[in-house]
Image (cartoon, helix red, strand yellow):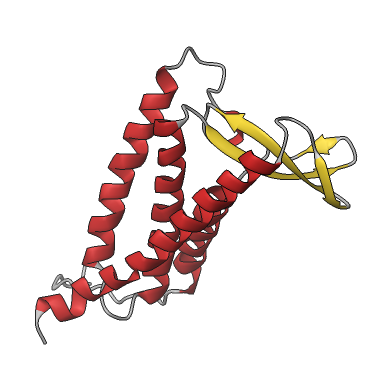
Length: 172
């Protein structure tokens, strides 16, 4: 079996990143067209659709900065995306769980990068709350990133430990 057969095969999962981007941008376009900015539309108890624009990162981190954060987050996301593609390419055939986690993060990151470049902010519209506590609004890209990160964390605990393969003697 060639090296490409065992490592490069995970690039086929990039279709999932494209799907995340398409669904994310489509739902953001629908939210922008159908919702009035800042006006919650109740969907069910504890959940509204509320159109918001986030110039910061997760939980509006750095949203109040002077504008430099836009290009900082675009650059950061693009660098992380390149690293993720190389990581994806290096995976072995049996590392499907990791491949899915990586492409979910990649698709989410690129969906939000599109917003930052085109609009200068990220479109958020999913808004959960409990009584007076309101969870920061988010979008499908954020959801994909969170699911991918959660999968990576779970992967740490579900992978069996590989035995050490060094030739040192245990006699010390």
